[in-house]
Length: 310
Image (cartoon, rainbow, N blue to C red; front, side):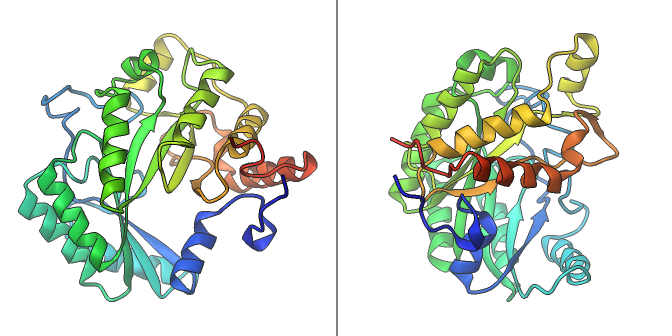
């Protein structure tokens, strides 16, 4: 098949180009910590959270929960304005499970972000088992007022690995959540992880094939990396497991892109870890080298997102 006409000479649908096309200009992101928690931490379904999740609820670069949403946004817009000129932002509720809490508190948090005239959209990271009907009603309401998407952390479709991750829900819960959000025309983005211990190359691609066909708008692809203070760090120190090398990871990403439909938005191709707390591997700290390596491999192999999609 012929290569789709992706913007900026790319060979995949980038998140930045998607936002620029949708909103007419470059769009920044404000990573927020709403001070919520997670049913996999507070004992409702489990404790400790997923093994890779840090104490900040996977919100390494999010704002400080001691500040209000408005204060976090003001701080981050000031910092970002010193780096580049951006007039529009996505308010990204990143830390913990952001549909887990009292409904009126959630409403107050989300609408607080919308009061900022620079906010052109809201992204809400949560779990597929935290989407009760009243929460879906609130999300539908928001979806009519702004550009909304919901992020769900799938990581893998394989139950053996999911148990090891202490994910706390089965695949059919994820599938059902995607379906119910889709019925309300709410965009869904899913996170997947490459390099989970015990997973074969074929199993990782099976996860990719699954997310390619369940109705997602976008995907975030992550490398498994070990963060200081996590349960994963304790496991790794006690019995070190194989960590992907940069070239191995690039090969996996290129193959994954080939399997994804051309209209799917690629929100992320590599994870970010704070230099101070990243235990292993250290090579993702040079994010530009990883992304350039992916672009180079796509070009050298004359391949692109969707080339092998069926």
